Amino acid sequence: MRIIIVEDEAVTRRWVRKKIEELDINYHVTGEFVNGKQALEYCREHEVEVVFTDIRMAVMDGLEFLDRLKNERIAQPYKVILSAYDEFHYARQAIKAGANEFILKPEITKEGMKTTLEEAKRFLEKSRTKDSKAACGSEPERRRITMEKLLETGTTGQQREEVLRGLENRGIALKEEGIVLLSISLSGEEKGDAALEVAELFMQEEHISGICASIEEGEYLLLYNPSLHMDREVFSGKLEALLRHNLGTEVYIGISVKKDGFHHLRDMLRQARMARENRTFFRLPGIWRYDAMTVNSDSGHGDLYYAVEMREILAAVEKNDFESAEEKMKGILADIEGRIVLPPAYVKALCIEILSSCIRKARTYALTAAEVEEVRRTEMMFCERFRTLQDLKNWTYAGMAELRRICEIKSSLNQYSGPVRDIIGYVKQNYTQKISLEQVSSLVHLNKSYVSVLFKKETGEKFSDFLLRVRLEESRRLLGATRKSIQEIAGMAGFPDAAYFSRAFKERYGKSPMEYRKGI
Image 1: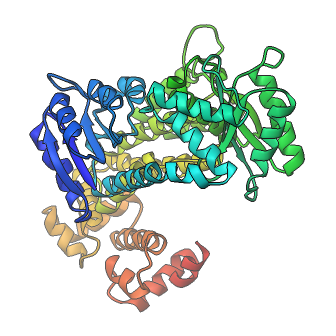
Image 2: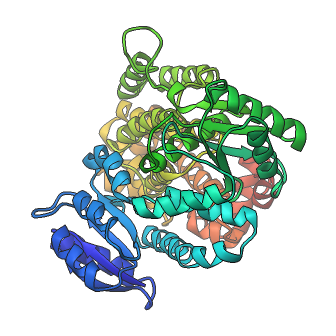
């Protein structure tokens, strides 16, 4: 695969190249350029299959480069924007310019690069085979290829005219003026071409010009010109009822805004998918319009939904009042169930903002290695895609509970004297090692008997009981988070042998380590 990198920062260029070439010897970075002008000249003379480009560059920036590249009479490469956090406002322009994907520069990883290049490979394979398939494929296959050609941002006006003439030859007079795109998915088992057939028959019956195609697994796209007697909501509602009645399945339909011109199709596809995902996210079969989605509350003041509640939650976390924060968070998520106007991405952003505030609070403390890992594990989930509101709620509740536990333990240390805080911190950092009361007494330069009395007085626990509890809590975490043997876990948690570990574990939790693991 021939790849070029367009980036004016030398370090970033080398970083991207390094991550690419670590993956596979078949990935070749054949050119590196500091601006779009150099890269465009290279693309005119050489075959390029994947382009990674920055946005802001001198001479010719990334957006102009992509826009000019898509109008070149060459095989179009897979185009990836390398974006900084503050450049997402360029997203709409980049989509129009033909970008296939965005990568945040701070998140360039080997695994992420692997996913991007695998997607690029699929894109290139589809591009190379679609013309030959169109000539001899089945009608559903021809529909799919036609839809993909219309969706391609790099398709020129002449190419679109050829596609439209092909549709006219098949009796479909699709016009650029007033087009609407639907994204459709069905629940349950795959229905094959049945959904396509129902949609096509429905359009024929209503004398509406359009094309329906299966693009991705489980998704159908329908592009059509609405008639004067049936607006897009009525059309979609009738289609949803027909599919549900004839196929015996729940139907989810997202509706784009109405546009003039096929160059809007990539943006319309994003709109239709967002609206459909809104229905699946809330588990409400039916239809939804993209322009009915909003993040502004209906209070009339232009505020974002839950803006006041979010400020209260963040303030409560800052004050270590996790009980109030958690109660308000659960109230928001319960209320959201009836707010289908909210985009799923906005709901997820609310949850991430709450958990981010908890993470920031947790990191103000000196964390143990296990606590650092717990915080990191929650943060890693920010990139996950949650298909339903319930999935998102479950993750948010679990993350909040764990972060609350860490912060409350850490904040409670402030009530202890300096020597006791030092002993607790030492134990939590070194519980895997052999630790004695004599050892920690020496650490804080105090008499052993005095430390024993002081520790019990301030914490309510004998030192030996506290040490055992720390080790048992870590062993319980390891039982759930790893597949290590009982012997290995005993050693990792600081126990001298598995027999002693098993006895202590059962005494505290009422079941053996193996029984506990089976019940998780």
